[in-house]
Length: 143
Image (cartoon, rainbow, N blue to C red):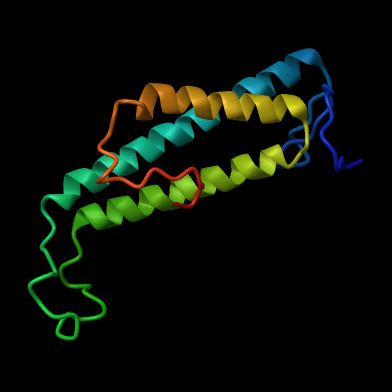
C-alpha cells in the first residue's frame, strides 16, 4: 500500500520494488544509505561549483564582442571544463531527483535521514565560506 501521508514505520519501499525493508537492520541500513547519498549530493555540488569558479577565470569574455557576431553553437572550441560541468550537473540532478523520489515514500525516517545528510554534507563540503557574489547558492536540486 502506498502512503499519502507521513508515517513512521520500519516497512518502507524505496525507489524500486526490490528495495524493501522488513526489519530494523534493513531499515537502519537504508536510512544510512539515504544519509550518505544525500551528503554525497552536497559533495558533488561543491565540486561542480568549484569547477565552475576555477574555469571562470579562463573563459573568454563575450562582453567585447556583440552577441550578433557570436555563433549560436561553438562546437569547435568547447572547453573540457564545460563538458565536465555539464556531466557533473547531470549526475547531481539525477541524484537530487532520486532523493526527492525517496522522500516521496512518505516515511518519516527517510525524510529525516535525507535532511540530516544534506545538512551534514553542506556543513562539511560547502560551508567553507564561498564568495556569495560569485555563486548563487540555491537549494533547488537543479540549480
